[in-house]
Image (tube, rainbow, N blue to C red; front, side):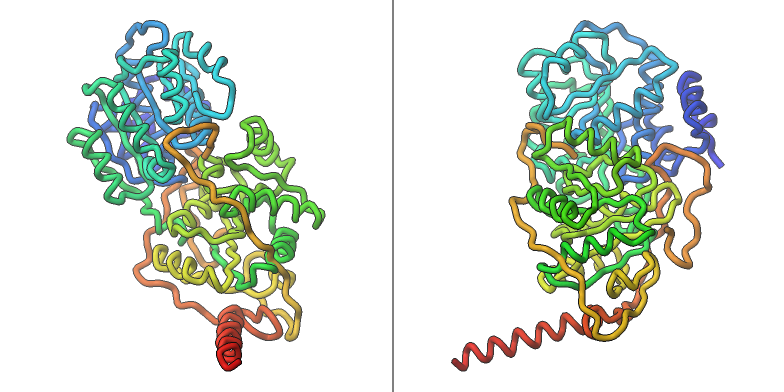
Length: 478
């Protein structure tokens, strides 16, 4: 098995890796580090949980260490672009750890915080700049940083940057950096727009790929509860009250919806906090810090804000709202079951969301198992509740959907039964670990446990459909 010591990394980096307890590279690291060390451009298909930060940070640091160069004030040698604040901060934290035994300096800039401190940091010696596109261009316009001497460019989470509308910012940044450079692009998915960007930014790139986006879902114990929109708050409170719910992230589709869920949980006596694009950076850092330290058990998040969250020990992910984009579901549930640990993902599905559920199952090739009421559920195994039992509830969701424009402007980012353990148990960069291979055929869905008065989720949904048809016929008759 390949070890970090086999990759030819600088001694300072190996010392830092040893101090962090990292010995064995993940598949993306083992594939990406050698060609990057050779100076090749690289196109990497890798999602959260594969260890891609170290895959580009370690060889980048090695090249800076072995090719020292004196830079003028406000000039940087390497630029790493990230779609969100949280992910940018996480990347820079990792780089600082890997460079702890060297003289390489890094800093991070993003929106949502006063710009003065960032300008002062750029006035010092900086080798690596991690940035969100919007704030970077603001600093360029203020002449706080020059990109004319960039030797290395990294585009991380490129698909998310496109989703947030950063394409125009990326095009402008490309005109500000030298054409002669080494460029690395990483993306969880590789649709045509990403391929187009790769062809424009990269020259004769090496392509590496691990853990396609759909395979992540196969490593997580996934469940769905069929319910009504008005029943969600009570159902969520029940779900979060089971003993197995040690640390959970609840996903909503909108910023307003996240705040509403926090208020509803507070009424139910459950402490939680929300992170989304309308929260200040200080609020988000405090909420995430409390969640990471175990002071807060429940975090409510939108998709953009959750990007880059790297917290160990998340036992459950709850999809209060199903996302409209199937890949987003995979990113959401990837917050749990990290580094070989077990994890459970629960989705609430209304009749209106059945189309989203079907699209998710088609992408992941996994039929998500329906379960009954939460009080009769042990957190892992579906159990049949007594007949004629009332159902828990769920609340209306509102508010504008969180999205992005071309500028940053303060915008962020139990193992399945019968499954084999993932990973070798050796510590690597978190997130890390190779994802299971994609299954060839979907798992056949079993009938759900009764969810209301003896009806399973599918049967209950069918009853509602029949009832709507009957009501429509009556209205037409009148």
